[in-house]
Image 1: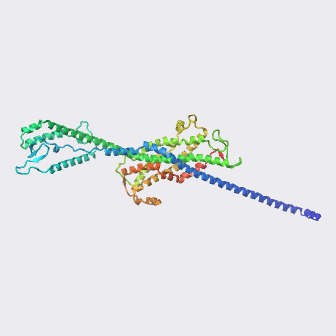
Image 2 (image 1 turned 180 degrees about the horizontal axis):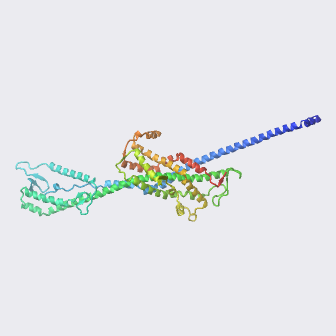
Image 3 (image 1 turned 120 degrees about the horizontal axis):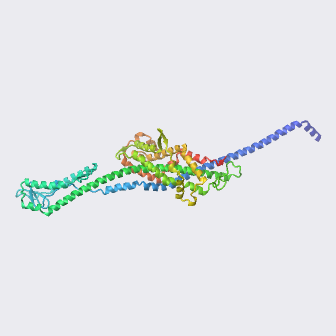
Amino acid sequence: MISAVTGFANRHRRGLAITAGITGGIYMMGKYAKSKLIEFQEKSSSERTAKENMKRRFEQNQQDCVFTVLSLLPTLGDQLLHELNVELITAKLQQTRSQRPTPLPTPDTSMILPPKPSEVINGEHHEANGEIKENVPAGEDQEQPKEDTNKSKETGTEETSRATEEDTTEAPKEETNGVQVNGHVDKTEDSEKAAESIEETTHVNGSSPSTPEIKVQEESPSTDSEKTQQLKAAQTVVRDEATAAIDRRTKLELWNELKVMSFTRTVTALYSLTFLTLLTQVQLNLLGRFTYVSSVVALSSTTDASVRLESPTKGSMSSTNGQLDFQTEKKYLTFSYWLLHEGWRRWSEKVREVVEDVVGGISLKKTLTAREFSELLGEIRTRLEYTQMDGIQVPVNMREYMLPDEASDEREVLRAGGVDEFDLVVDPVLRNLLDETRDFIDSADFSTVLNSTLNATFARFSLALQPTFNPFLSQSGNAVIEEIEDDEDIDRAVPLASLLPLIARQVHLIINGVPNEYVESLAMVKELQAFSAIVYSSFSEQFAN
C-alpha cells in the first residue's frame, strides 16, 4: 500500500507540486485580499469619521464666531453711540423748538396811544383810560360798544404776527449801524415821528395848540414814561427778532449735522459689523485648525499616523500634539481690540468725508424713492470701497482698519488688552499667526468675500426701510422680497428729513438687535462659509501628510 502510494507520487510528482502551489497561492491571495479589504474598510471608516469630526468642529466653530461677534458688538456700540450721538442733536432741536420765543407785536403809529387827558382829535373824544369815543350830539347815547376797538387791536396783532412769520422765512441780514437787524428796522425813530404826526393832526383838525390841557399833557412826566416804555418795547422786539434769527441759523446747522451724522453713524456701523465678522472668522478658524489637528494627533496610536507634526519651533507649541499654548491664543485674540477701539474711528472719519460730499448738498425737503435711496447708498459705497488708479477702480485694502501695522501699535494693543508688561512681545508663533492673518486679508478671495458680505448687510438695511417707501408691502417672510423685486410697488417718494430718524434708529438694531438679523444674514453668506472652510482646512507647512 505504501509502496503503491509512493510510486504514484513519484510518477505524478510534477502535477502534485503544481496543484499544491496553485492551491497555496489561492489561499495566500485570499488571505491577502481579505486583509487589504479589512484595511480599506478601516481606512474609509476612519476617514469618514475624521471628515464628520472636522465638519462637526467646523460648524461648531462657525457658531462660536457668531457668538463672539455678538459678545463684542456692545463694546463697539457703546463707543459708536457715544461719539456719534445723534440723539443729542435731536434733543437740541427739540429744545430750540420748545424755547422759541413768542413774537411780540411790532409797534406801529396806529398803536401809539394819545395823551391821557381828554382832547379832541379828528372829531373823536379821547379819554384818559385810552378809550376812544366819538363826538356825538347831545341827547344821543354816549356809550358806544367797544367791539370795533377790540377788533382793530386784534387785527393789528394778527397782521404783526403774520409779518413776523414772513420775516422768519427770509435770509437773516445784519448791519453794524443798528438801524436794520435781521431784516427788521429799528422802530425808535418811527415811534417819535408817529407822536409828532399825532400832534400835527391835532392842529389841522381845529384843536388849538395853545389848549391848556394839551400843553399840560405834553409837559407831563407820564407821557415821557410812556414813550420810554414804547422805546423799550421796540428794542425788545428787535432783540427778540435778532435772537430768533440766530436760533434759525443754529437750527439749520443742527439739521445739517443731524443729516450727516445719521448717515455717518449707520454706514460706519454696517461696515464695522462686517469687518468684525470677517476678522473673527479668520482668527477663530485659524485657532480651530490647530485644535482640530491636535485632536487628530492625540487620537492616533502610533508615530506613523496619517497626520503628523514636524519638529515645532521653540516656544510655539506646548507639546508635540500641535496645541498652541494659552498665552499665545490670548495675545492673538487680543488684536481684535484694534478694530473695536481704533480701527472703526479711522474708518468713521473717512465715512464722514464721503457722506459730506454725497449727502451734504442734498436738501432735507428733497424726496427720494427707494431706487434713488439705493443709488445714494451705492455712490457712498463706491467712494468708500474703491479708489482710482490710472483711471481704473481698484478695491481699497481694509487691513489698516482691522489690524495694526506698526510694531509700536501692536505693543499698545497688547498693553490695552491686559497683557502683562513683561510679556509685551510678539514671539515667532504669534508673528506667524499675525502674518498669516494679514495674508488672508490681503488675498483676492477676501476682497470677493468682503464685497458679498457688504452686499448682504446693505441689502438687509434697505429691506428694513422698504415699508417706509411702500407701506403696502407684505411683512410675511419671502413675500416681502418678491414684492420688492417688482418696481411698480416702489413708487412712493419720501422726504429726506423723514428718513433720518429711521436711518439713525437702525444702529440700535445693528448693535443690540435680539435676534440680530444683520449678524444672522452675514452668517448665511455662502462666500463667507467657503472662505472660512479654506482658512480652517489650509494647514500650514508645519503639518505634513
